Length: 314
Image (cartoon, rainbow, N blue to C red):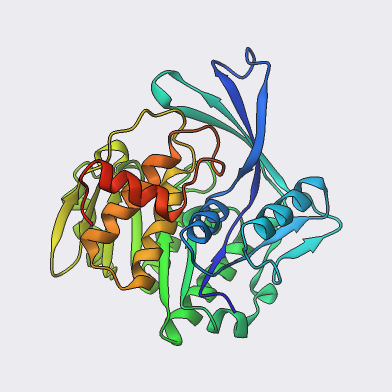
């Protein structure tokens, strides 16, 4: 049984190789994405034992995910492959300054059909950490129910729940999002947020206020990710900002998901919050130095090298 289990929506990625509108770009690089899959790859590359549970289409794209996860040492024994469903796709357009925009083809995908009935309870109970996200909750009522139930099971048996808000306003209405996220927060040991998330959901613009709001909703540890500026960490005992690292940004896709996978490494290793935050910042930063969500995710020693090179906290 893996120590870490993630549930979510894998998506095949087509990333433009040049800056510009999709209608003008001619070449794309095929890769893999989906926030929880990115998380799983990151956690595996930090040396953790990881499993991914989800629905995949019985198509070439679905098979490419199985190949990817197997090559990363990720357990795929509980992946549900459906003959009459398809694997979701998204396309990334690159913008000046390292930004990006997304076009999605995901409605009705195999991942969105994954439900409570597909969960293997014993598999979940065997894990030390469960990770999921707001995107998983948003893609369908079925996956939302599965994710919340998995969090409930993890909490009940004394495991650790890791949750990234990853708010996507186009996927669901704001009231459904707030209510569903509140339930997820009640089971969460750590919640990762961006200020875009908090502004969209609650109209907040200050990290301290955002963190306090989530703690008031029952979250033990809140991590507000702030891109190249690093992150703000808040618990009932302490709050601090951990500065980011100096890198040349190529494409920030998946950097936040890689950050989450690195954070869980710190949890399982028993590191203190400052060391964990520094390591997660390094993994997230290095992920932004290449194209696509998966290919640039660094391994443990690469992240450690960046920390030592720039005199980061360790």
